[in-house]
Length: 472
Image (cartoon, rainbow, N blue to C red; front, top):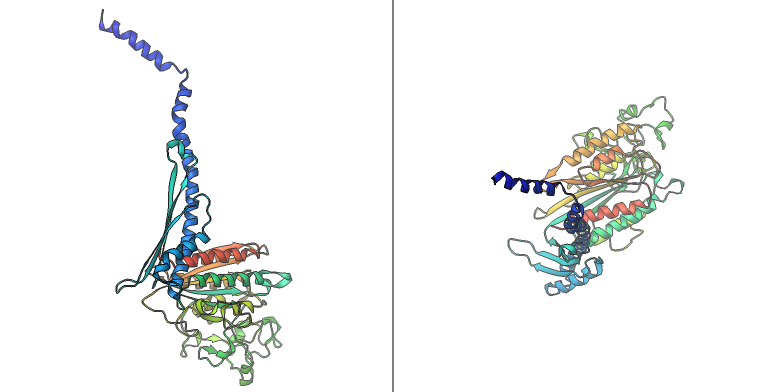
């Protein structure tokens, strides 16, 4: 018998086996089912673990800050760090998927080469639901938070729209803003462990900004343009001048070059308008030899409440202080709404409030510390009027240039000044392109279509700023 005759039957049987499909799908499905369920279940279980890990991180961040604050104030000493951390964490953490978290707090005192440091770790596990089929019954979750003394300090400027649309027709936007801004002060205070840790300034704006009548003799003011005594008389609107035929444009009036009389200067309400272009888009300090750098005083109305330069949240924000405009919450409580919108002037003065030079002379920064400056610009409408224009597009162009100048400043740690922008759009306006562009690639752009949404946004910004106080 030949080799061929022996092999041929084997080949025929092999080919028949290959063509036979009977029961193959069931067999293959049975083989694949277990790992398939494992992979699908893994996605579900990993999502649960991610939620637990996020809850742990949030609670640890707050715990680290509160323990650090207690250490700094002398409320506790190093021997109480662990028990205090346990107490704070347990009161803050409520994730049911990983209910038992072990917290470890370690405090390292300051040495000659390093600042004091507090590290709070949390670890635990979740019971898996689907991955059990792969014999994986638990997943470990955990996070860590570190607070370093001598780490990041915050300087935050609030540029707040107080125009008429914030209160007109029964609007609650200004009331919601007050609540949200005061809550932000409380949030920032919780992250402060000493007077120098967090400062906040408040700049209310409409078309103008009020620098306070106490500055009437300041060298950085100019009383030689269209205010009282220059284009007489000045009323509440540009177009209602008595001698309109003689001063029919803003530009004509601004070139008059007259000086206020002494009696009219005494009646000055504290408001200034935009600086000369392009100083309206810079943080350049005013100089007596360059009139363009000075801030033109005006008695046009309405004039908002005076701004408040940087104040420590640690010292001045503990109570409501409803009648004291020299405190942060007192200033917020007394805000009123009127007038048109000029976001750029509010933004510039917020930026100026963070500078250690005139006109507002912010406290000098200690070179041994890292600082983060931030501006929160909130507006409920599109731009309508500034010193030169009644056109939103023209005013937006000035604001865009200002935003770009703010964001161009860089440090080794990132932007010199973070810029958060908020549009409260309850009137169906288009999305503000200038606010969105200003916030992008910086602090961020936020938008809400309800007055109540102001509080949610301020909470988000507050959480972002609080994290900047943590080194990790």
